[in-house]
Length: 110
Picture 1 (tube, helix red, strand yellow):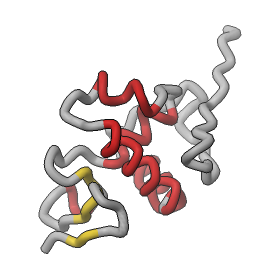
Picture 2 (picture 1 turned 135 degrees about the vertical axis):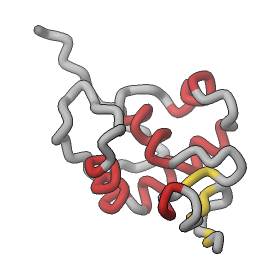
Picture 3 (picture 1 turned 180 degrees about the horizontal axis):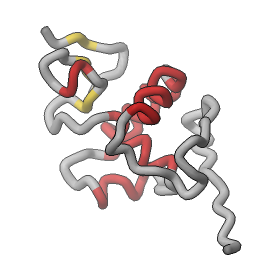
Picture 4 (picture 1 turned 90 degrees about the vertical axis):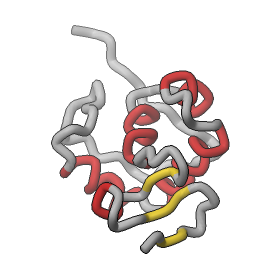
């Protein structure tokens, strides 16, 4: 049974990805959007990499992440297929204010 969330585009369906939050329609996991953003992609550039998503869906996924960051971070770390950030696989991300969208700083030194 599909479970609506308080986010317009985000649903949970136990029959899809074991109930992981997804974008309704394209079934893109919120986790995939968050991982791109955590790697330094701006929200505005994510639809170019995931063209089946609208900018509104991306912002809603990031808003969902902001509201559920503890459980989402745990799910990302548990997923063996998760992309790892440039900061390393064990980096813990704190709750970030969605509208300020602070991006991770990258240290480019070897």
